Image 1 (cartoon, rainbow, N blue to C red):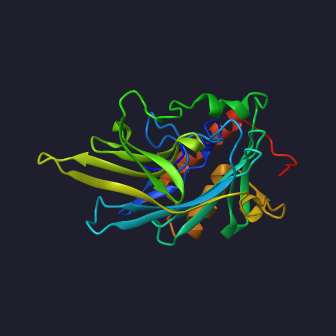
Image 2 (cartoon, rainbow, N blue to C red):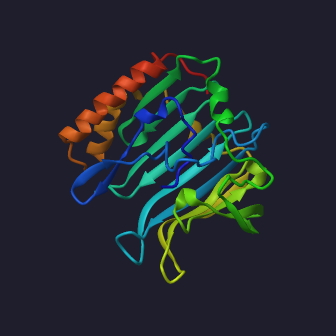
Length: 273
């Protein structure tokens, strides 16, 4: 699965939208633990480079022609603040949320459709802003992990990228990484090598756009009018709006989300954008 899993390492575990497979709702870790060993982490550079990009993810596991899974807009400001806007198409009604990380380590999940949000201020604020940076495994200039292989280099939207074969995405997995942005992932393919030597692509993400410069301020709008609620309640309302039936499995997971929130986060208070 293709996400920047280190974005919100401490508190984002409580922000998990569902992946629907048939009639069952299964947790999809959209912003955390997409694949063990992934290097993506924000801020991407010592002096964060402001940019905005859009990625489209297509799932080929059940449909040879591919099913649209989600579309992500990712942006970073020059002060290190980041946002991911995710629209998921695996629910009866497409569902969109924004996940924002501020320079002081505060994380927010906002669901504009229901005018609600959940905020996590790490209890250990003095170290929160640097934890993600310290977790980066890959480093420029080659962006290679211990088992990775450089396949070549190319250019996407004016940015030089390394094409890397990686076992993080299966025996035939590949990633397109931008060294100038701290090995930021631009594209990826979860794939398996077949007995005839071909690659079977299960999940693919393609870069639709990339722009350098300060992102649209509206992406970071915290909207003081939004209701601040517990992660479990935010999730329940979000799923209801997406047409997902609330069930005991989801209820159990929501209790666990609130427990993680209580352990890692301070009570919400006034925020600085």
